[in-house]
Each structure stands twice: as structure tokens, then as C-alpha cells.
Length: 322
Image (cartoon, rainbow, N blue to C red; front, side, top):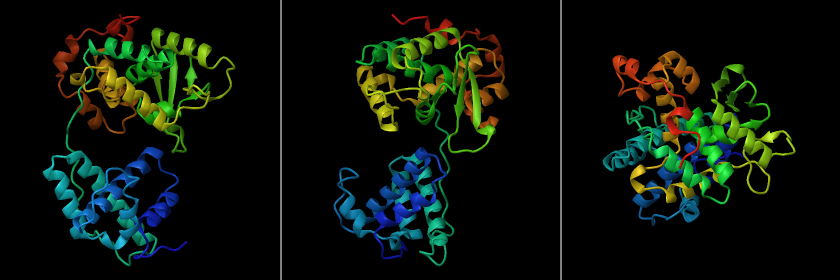
């Protein structure tokens, strides 16, 4: 169905989402959220009530049209984020608006790019700290104390030991991605089409043992499919993983600032502690540039790295947390 400047932005976003079917689900979700926030901000600037949730925002999104996508409105929105010190959101939402604007030209909604000259704010160089060594046993215990303790602890430990993002956890398939005898986990970019999208992470003995135990308990039929399942036997969704991590966060001290992406920082730090060079660590992490990996290693000098003990995951945290 053709879209126009007068179409509700909800309908236009639906077309935008379907046209970008080759993107990662998480990437598209981020784009849509950024454009949605911009539309709500624009509506509030015109005197509409700010909604409390995305569901409540539907009336606003039915009145806002692509005509609101102007350079003035985009700059005003990004400036509001920067003033509130939300620089990371400003970067991601600015990029989403720029990509959406270009697509609107492709879709012939606009004759020319309405955001020509728009400058996407730079990504701030804020580095999430890895978990402290004493944090990880607490995280494991909190996960183990849940109703699905064996599964939840396995998920958390695999994330910390192998540096996995939430989508990567969700995309793990059994048995193709889990080589227990070879102690290798295959982490794949499901949106990509080449072998270059696969990275291999070596697992230590405890990770292998935990996965083997989890598979025996949760996947005794050994049928192919998602590695991590919900209590109905279906693959955990992105929302299912998010729910697990929200429950886990509520059980942990607030000052720990539990976020799943800190598990990735922890894995990268531990690979460096284990004596891996920067290039090897970059490959394990799946980074395309060593500059990205260097941000994770920022607090270590080369001399400090040489002096560090070279422990494995199990040596750092013990076979079982207290």
C-alpha cells in the first residue's frame, strides 16, 4: 500500500519495518523505538499529552505524520536528549532518524531527504565496567535461586564466560551451535549469509559440564531447535530473556548495577586477563575493529596485562558459587 506525507506515522513505520526484513530483529527494534520517541516528542511539543507507555502513545502516533520529520524537529529532539545527558540515546535515535529519512526518499514519500545536513551525534565513549570478581558468585546464586534455577544459571554463566549479547543467547541452536566434545560454542549472526558471521568461542570444562547437565534436564529428546527453552518447551523469546534478567536484577544489590551487556565486558576483560592478545580477543568478541576491543581494555596498560594472573573462568569464580 502506498504511503504519503499525510499517512499516520504508524502505517509508515510498518512499511519501513517490512522493507528492512534483512536486518537483525534487535537492530530494527532499536530503529522503531527511536523513531517512535521522536514522534511522541514532536507531538508533545505541539501540546499533546505525553503518554506513559507505547500502548498509550497510539493516539499520538495516529495523528503524527512523516511531515513532522523536518531538520528543525530532529535537531530539537536530539538537543533535548543531549541536555538531559542521554547522549547514547541521542546517537542511536539520531541514526534511526537519518536512516528512516533516507528510506522515505526511497519510498517516494519525500522528493528529497528532509534531513539533509543533519549530524548524528557521536557515540559517547562510555565504557560499562565489567563485573567485579566478587559479583559473579552473587549473580550465579541469584539465578540459581529462581524457579528455573538450573536453566537461568546456565544462561548467565554462558553469557559471562562467552561474552554473548541477548540476541546471541536467543539465537543459539542445538545441536549445531554447541560442540561439547570439542568445547566450542558457535555464535552466529542469523541475519548474515556468510561464514564470516560465525565466531567460535572456546568453553572451559565447567561451561561444558553445565551445558551438558542443562541439555539432559531440559532437552532430553535431543531434538534440534533453540538451545534455551521456556517452561513450555518453546525457544525463549527476546522478551523471555529480558524477563529473566529483570527478575535477576531485583534480587541483586542495587549498587551492582546489573545489566546483561556487562557480562560481555566481563568476558572480554577475562580473555585479556588470560593472556590473549588484542587481535585474538577481538575475534572471540566478534568485533570488526580492534579499536572497539581497545575500549574494553582501556584501563589496562601493556605492562599491567603482562603482570596479571592468567585464570580461566572456573579459576576466577570457582566451580560453584557459595
